[in-house]
Structure formats: C-alpha cells, structure tokens
Length: 203
Image 1 (tube, helix red, strand yellow):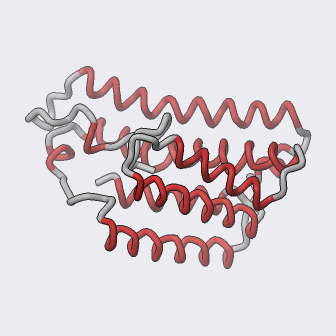
Image 2 (image 1 turned 90 degrees about the vertical axis):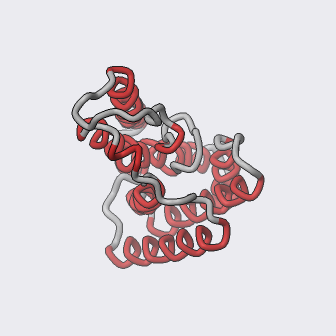
C-alpha cells in the first residue's frame, strides 16, 4: 500500500519531489529514482514467476495466476472500495489531496510513478504474498486461516514505521486480501483490490 514505505511500494508524498521544478526540466535523480522503483517490482514479478515455474509444472495454478469468476472479482473489489473509503473517512489515513508534486514533475516521472506504485507494485506484492507464499505455506501444512493470518501479520510488519492504528489497518487489509485469494482461488482478485487502493492513495 502506498501509505507505507514497504520494500516495493513507496509514498509519493514522501519522495524527493518537493523542490519547485519546471515540468519540462526533469532532475536526473528524480527520474532515476522513479525508474528504479518501477524496475524493482518488475524484477520481483519475473523472479517470482521463475521460481514458481521451477517448483511446479502447473505453476499458474500454484501461485493462483488463473482467471477468477467475474462475480467474485466484482464482489471483492466493491467490498474493498467500501472498506477503503470508510476507513479513510474515519482515520484519514490517505491525508489531504496534494497535486503540487505532480505539477512540478515531468510526464515521464509521473508515468513511471503510476506504473510502479499503481500497477507493478501491487502485482509484485500480491504474487509474492498471496501467490507464492500463500501456496508455499499451505503446501507445508499450515491451515488456510493460519496462512492468511500469518501473511497479514507479515504484511503489517513491513509497515512498521506507521502508527499503531495504521498497522492494524494493514493487518485487516492483509486478512481481506487473503480471504479474497481463498474464496476466488485466484491471486488476480487481490491484485485488482491492491491496485484500486494504491491508485486511490497515490495522488
């Protein structure tokens, strides 16, 4: 989620875009940082798929990279949007809308940020957590509910720098993403949920 500094996702508001820079003049460090934070999840996706292919002939099914039913996908995304908006209304975890950094940067930096935070980051994180690790732990003998709770706790722990209420929010998020993986039998559903969250939080 973009409200944290997890190892893949990053917060737009806390990045090095506070200086007043003309939209056309892109500082090399800013462009390089955005490229790096786009490349990291892309590499993670490739590595995760490569490991899954080596471990299982039916690797798509192993990590849940199969098409969900439209009803499951739609139901979980709607429920998650309701949860996202409700918690933001109560907790204000998103913070105020601030488009100043976007206006101060070039189109290339903006595109890389949306690609890295809004799309590739969620895909990589869900392939790892609700894809590979989910299957690995259940294969090792953990009950599904134990796997969901353990991964949710690990998910929250990655955001250790956040305040306690936000950590609790991330834990519940992890549980919801895990339940979506279980009921839909597809990692695509939590990926879609995660993308929706990040695209809301990124601005």
